[in-house]
Image (cartoon, rainbow, N blue to C red; front, side, top):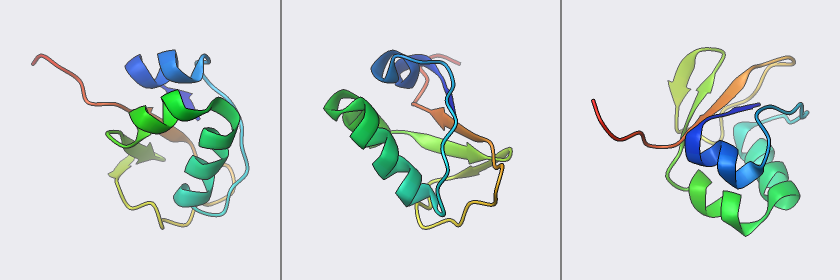
Length: 76
C-alpha cells in the first residue's frame, strides 16, 4: 500500500504491507486498522493496482501486488 495526499493524512502512514485476496478485502482491513476518517476518504479514492487504475473493488489481487490509494487531486 502506498498512500497519497489526503489518504496519507487519514491513515497516518506513507506505506504499509497487507495481505488480501481482493481490493474489497484490502479496503476492509484498512478501515479496520485506521478508522472512520480513512473510510470517508476511501469512498472518493481511486486505486492503482500494479500501475493500472481501477475502482473495481472486487478485483482479485495477486500476491505482491502494489496498490496506490489516490484521492481526487485539485488543479491541473
